[in-house]
Image 1: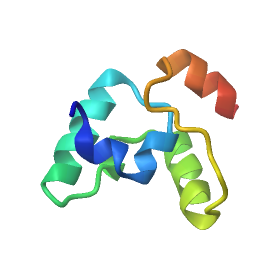
Image 2: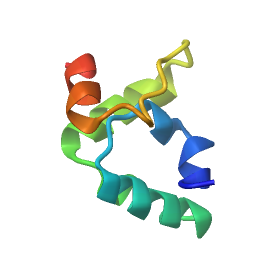
Image 3: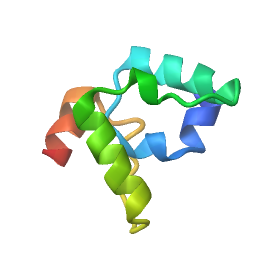
Image 4: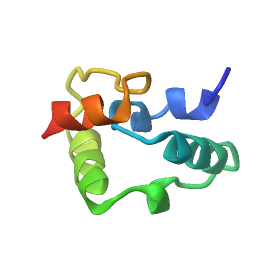
Length: 72
């Protein structure tokens, strides 16, 4: 599957560009964190996601600009 590791992680709840998806998936596949590829705003969202495990919408396949607007 394309971006297999990304789809199995909390990153799937973030708005990500195609380049971020590729880099983060590769990092996760190498047992590394993909956080270095996130913007400060995305890091804030990731911390919130990890802190609260409530039901969230998977944004993985949502176009970046649309997903970004959903979280703002």
